[in-house]
Image (cartoon, rainbow, N blue to C red):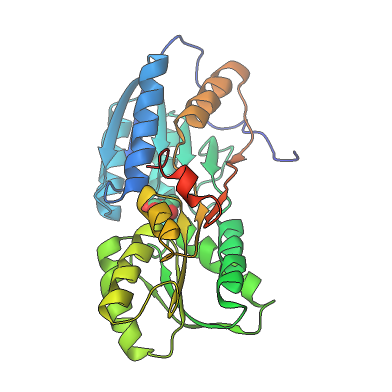
Length: 305
Ligand code: AHR
């Protein structure tokens, strides 16, 4: 595929089972819980011993968590970094000889490089997700909308790239305009409170683009509380594909949600084991994502998280 292979990162010997650590950045939404559950299930299936830490959505705590995990000297360390600022602690893990695999979010590659200080990053294509959200928004609104954008956690790779992809795509749609853009930290509560405020300051807004489903669901509650009808007065588009979001799509309150698959476990451990056997893997692995809209939301609710 032309993606370089990881060769200089700390090596992983071939063993039957491994002691593995996973630094999760938060457990405050169904997406995070699904990711952690996928890692736990897959580790158990393969007989690996997995330690999980939860940083409570706090960068300082995640750095301390990772330092603590490094001290335990696991065979391999998985990190879902809260923001791109976690490069230095990845460098510390590499210096301690621990192979690091980044899951779902990246770090600043000028500080820690894939194939060097960490083995690889297993991600969705967040820029592409942002573009697909913009195309869905164009469809929802007939190409004319004044958009409130709810950004994810400031400095996180999905917030950066989902904004970038959306902004790039709407340059092709002169009728789509982002009138205000603010972080709601990927949470439902902030999605609701930030939308309440922004609907007051921008009463002419006709659409909401949320970087994840939880913020979109909070936004939908705020739209209703403002006496407007989500799905007709205000079109809402988001990213993830959670069960609550698919239910909202089916109910006509959410126009579409671009999938961001949280079930990393199988790919994570396949990659780790391949790295042990072959000494190299591609420095970036990208998961395939679907789009959920009225046509397929209902049939996917039962298997959603
Ligand atoms: O990094 C992926 C994002 O993080 C998901 O969209 C979001 O729900 C989660 O918190």
